[in-house]
Picture 1 (spheres, rainbow, N blue to C red):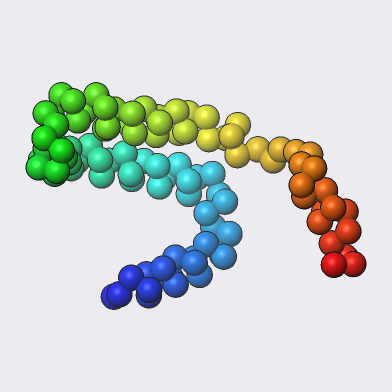
Picture 2 (cartoon, helix red, strand yellow):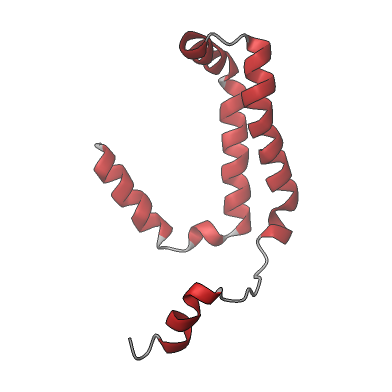
Length: 102
């Protein structure tokens, strides 16, 4: 499958609205976490080859940040996913208010 086909399939899937489901999002984050953990050695090797970083430096400056972010989002996903009403900024005020005549 070529990249354009993958992108097309991903866009089609996104339009199904399934990605809005909190359980779906949590599962994707868990899968990402597991992939990172299960491939740490490959990541260490690739980053060492490209940048000369040691395992310690790679973990402390790259991998640990990602794993901590995933942990944060898994813990706070429900509250972060709640609808939130926000005001329109000045730049978009005209477009929002008068979009029916534009």
